Every structure is written in C-alpha cells, then in structure tokens.
Image 1 (tube, rainbow, N blue to C red):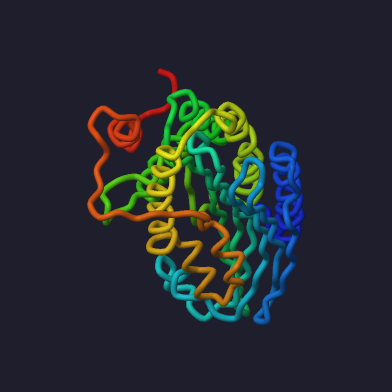
Image 2: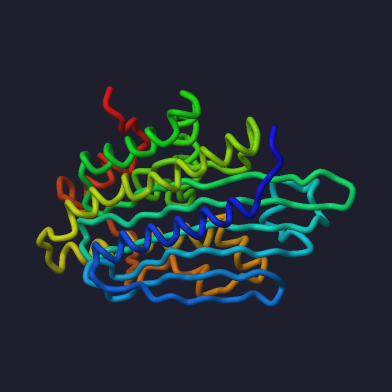
Length: 303
C-alpha cells in the first residue's frame, strides 16, 4: 500500500479544472472568468465562473486547496475520532446551469481529504461523484449519463457502480420534499480502499468521465426551442437545487464552517429561481412527466 501523495492529486485537480473549462468554453463561445483567491486561515484556490453566457446562464468550475488546525463540525459528524487534528482538503467542484430548460443542470466534484496528528499515521480519503438534474427530461440523456458513470467505475470492481448509484440516490434526496433532486448519477465519500493508488486512480476515472457523460446531453438539448412556460418551470424546479445545497449538502456546510470563500462556495446557486405555495403540475403534462417518470429511483442502464 503506497503512502498518500497530495501533491500528485493537486496537480491532477488543477489540470482537470483546466480541461473542463476549455471544453465548456468551446461549447459556449464565451470565456470563463478566472478569480484566484487566498484564505487567511490557510490555502486558497481558483474559481472559474461564467454568467450570462451563450449556453450557460450561470456556471462555475472551482478548484480549492485549503488547510486548517481543527476540523469543522461538518467533517467530524461521521469521524468524531479525528477531533483536534490538522487537516488538508483539495478538490474540483462544478455546477452548470444552462439557460435552455431542456438542457439539464449538472454537478460534479472530486476531492481529497487528509488529516495529520503528531506521531500518528495520516487519515485520508477521497470523495466525489456527479449527478444530473433535468427539468424536461429524456430517457436517452439519463441513460447516457449513467452509462458514463458505469464505464468510469467498472475497471475498479463490479460492485462500485450499483453501490455508488444507490449512495447518490440516497444522498441527493430532499427529505422535506420526499423527492430526489434529479435522475442521480454516482456519489462516494470516505473512500480509501484498497489503498491510495487504487483510490486515486478510481477518483481520476470519475473526474475524467464528466465531459463524456455531460457534453453529449448538453449538445443535444442546448438549441431546442422553448418558451416562457418552460422557463417558468425551470425557475421553479431550480428552487429544489437551492434547498438541497443550503440544507443538506456536506460540501457547502464544510466550506462555510471552515471559513472558505463564500463566493466560491455559493457559485452553485442558480441565477433565477422561483418558489410557489403548494404547486402541482397538470396531470399528463410535460411537467408532470418529470415527477412520475424521472424523479423516482430506477435503473437507468440498458438491461
């Protein structure tokens, strides 16, 4: 079993951010803003953001590498034995909100976390995943996205995709709404088996699979015609995204509790959102199909 190599992980993460941004700029035609920042408590990062683009109404691809002397509460929720340890966290996190309601919102992140204490071995793990949040969904898109997730994990074990898909379905679930956030994908955390090299290679495979999973979906949908009805429903459903990120998301909580840069942490927020009181879609409508056919836990891979 090899020792953790944070410098190698950091170099890959920086390269991943660059490759993803370049591909997205080619699709949108507008450059992403680059905003480098430092954190007084230790570390910093680079935020790449687009607003009012040709394809993306808002989106961000953020790299961060931050350090601290004591773990924040959100990190100790599942690992109380690590209290008092110094820590180091790095990752790439992205959220993209296309303007076209037929083009789904997408989230992806990959991250590495390690803690240190004098005279003790470092405790480390990887986390990450990706998930798709459509408003006017298509079976072809959900299946293709999940196939990319499956292909990324398959070389590392037959059990990983079903395990991480289930984890994603359970994690990205709005308990107060009793509904999934979208059609899911994969999610993993606290992953460190069977060792650093294997865990790192798997995490790289997940990060590198993002463009394969999302770009075909985006290119199929980004130029579809739409009207005010579709935009209105998109804004309403985006409210679910806001609710999940602020109420449940561990990454958002960790960033805010650890003194991270608020602008970078909240770059996932959609630009236009609406809430309504006890709204229900008209039965049989395109909007109702999202709830009946897609916001359900199901197997998206071909049988």
